[in-house]
Length: 441
Image (tube, rainbow, N blue to C red):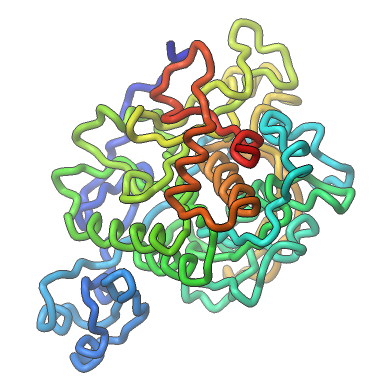
């Protein structure tokens, strides 16, 4: 029983560019002078006059800039860099933001449902590290300044603004707060693993797009600095299988397998297209369907702060937008939901069904240059919000059992999860995240 009204259409407008789909989440022209190359020898690339942007030979690839003729003179195993779009459900456009000084735990249904205060009696995630590969994390936010390691944080965009800032938008700060917002400063909100360290790996600049190569480099970097988890609340869907260049999938799998071998669990959002990934034979979702991905679907309540009538459901019910598919989803976690009709009928309270946490709104001058960010709190929904619940759970498990491999951690989280009674396994994979069971097993 699915308990959901699903949108059955696929967003398939647009044109094919570089084997990727231009439309819902993959709006990306190929870059004419930047290439991802399969290689274990960057010296040869340099001798050919190419500028090596990223040496990722630990994962058997490199990213170069130069003429394609120079690339093809060295190898036939390459493809142009492409861009990915940062996708969020439409409800986020209507959700408010606000500055609040009083504790916000009382409206954090996600942390209440996951028994986070009880988990903190066992561990707060001390001694662990989580990389947030996203739009940038505001290291100066009062609920995150304790957690962000600015020295390790990196800007992969080349925009010159540095790291530890939300130049690409407030999305990354919200993700980071779900992981590590301070639970001991008597203000703001609670994160699941406030004792963990956050490394900001910013791959989005002032536009809505991120380079595929930058994301690959950020994953390798996250693994190389010893991250227990890397959170990728990033998704590209729908990508036609028959036109997807095999090369892109191969290098992505190389990078993800490398990260997993280094002990880094890749918590990745499953996507927000209401798509059945299990039976969607003609399309693929990336990176959550890549090798070693820990794919996370979203759940959320309907009617947390208002009477939703017959539509009312608990925090563990599948969100209306989440992608699903028994073998495509590893686990489900709180990501927020909304009764769409309630946006008009309950304008003062519908958004309480979303996830409340830290945001930091970037400010730009008339030239479009980033100048500062305004720290605040706000509501968002998406598998983007579900993935960091799992990334934080990885940190909590590693805090109590630091010698576990990445596969061991994933196995424990799946083993301790369970599918709620009356719901379809397709929305949960192994089940709904149970943080307390995972840290006490």
